[in-house]
Image 1 (tube, one colour):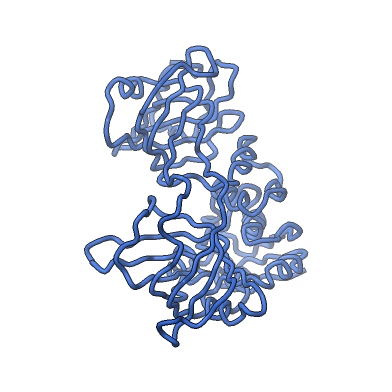
Image 2 (cartoon, rainbow, N blue to C red; image 1 turned 60 degrees about the horizontal axis):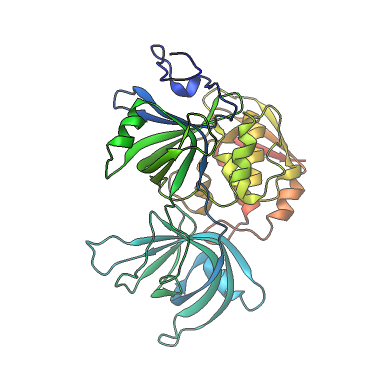
Length: 400
């Protein structure tokens, strides 16, 4: 059938990601729901104008106490300096172990951690109780009851190195927080045959699909896998016409970060053709921007000289955006695991090179990140760690 409506049948070998999508309606087309079989055959389930409930509610900061803590590395330094200043630790993760080894541990994400105070532990003078403030999230679902445990491990962000352990975290359990998997509504949805069947024949487990994000011209700018569609209700759309609004359970394993929407809106205008489109975004939106970008790498870059515009590299995601654009142009990212800065053991694959990177206005990032450390041991600071990562990747950095 034609592009204006109905099920699209791809030409042999063509992927849905590689074509443009349209429909003959006054409302913008922003999303596709697509299934893919083991043999890579793709099927469109629906076109949608919008999805309500994708983004998490504005998080609140909570005060927690790491009780009976044995800090090490950068956490030890933060605890030692808590009496002088509030040390910003950035993002950490917790693993609450269960005393029954056959039962799963609980994973928690702590965002924007700040150490407020520390004091000797009442039960063990060799340990300390550390008071922190952070935004609290969990993965993959809500943990409502504390497991029987006397051991909590603290890590330097997801995939980072161990920076301490404690007996428990007071304030972690028993709190009312936004649902980990909120109900979503597909707004202005044009269902195809597979979804029409699902509207009349429900499936308890839901259907695993991919969510395709489209730009204003109908080009695919991002594909999110692991989107589970569990139909709960369908009704005529508030947008009118023959469209429907479908309330679904499932969705992503966790809501998209609060503050990510500006990055989605920016990419709706298409893959950027000029640098620094990300510059006006805040730290959260910059981090989300990076998830739209495509990796740099593959071609032989021996002898290349690249220029990095450092005027907007004022936070860690900003540095990542600027490095990616310098090496590959707008809409690209540096294809290394940045978690190696936090102690991730995945290793570094040097780019075909060597490459020279001239970092203009490097003093901006150096000053902005002077008090930021991502290294598990707390040394060196983040800017120096980035230089080390680039050099280990075969890139010679010249600061200008």
